[in-house]
Amino acid sequence: MKNALFFAALLLASCKPADAPPAVSIHGAWARATVPGQMGSAAYFTIRNSGGEDKLLSVTSPVADSSLHSTSTDNGIMRMRPLDALEIPAKGAVDLKPGGTHVMLMGLKQPLQPGATLELDLKFEKSGERKVSAEVRPAGEGAGM
Image (cartoon, rainbow, N blue to C red; front, top):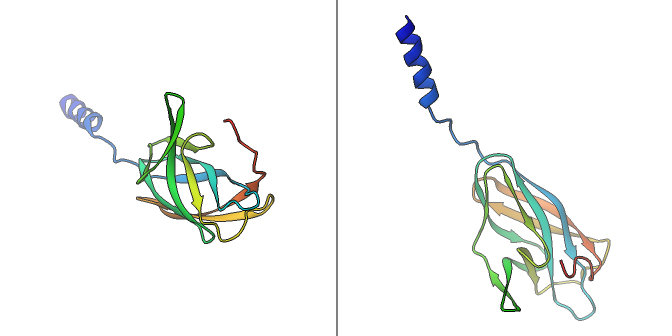
């Protein structure tokens, strides 16, 4: 009987639990207002994941063409590059923020006015789609971050 209990405990200890499905949520979504003549802007938010790993595949908006971008500085020169996808770690968070990873909004169909909202559709590899309303904040907000 002791041997059977020992082997049962050993078997349970060696079993790897199944990876939890991703459980993403979006927080603090906002976009930068435009100034007269400006046809582009950016949107920012935090993605929290309380489950297994996932990827943000795309972000779309009915008022602009959009794509994921990262920003880096090399020898004092700031560069932006498009991203095919954004890894969302298991039990982690990813911040999209000024001066870093962000959603580039190009070819705006209308100006973004402070106080308005911008609708964003996020598509995840495993978590499916999420709709987000981003608050439009004044153009200078978040500068230098």
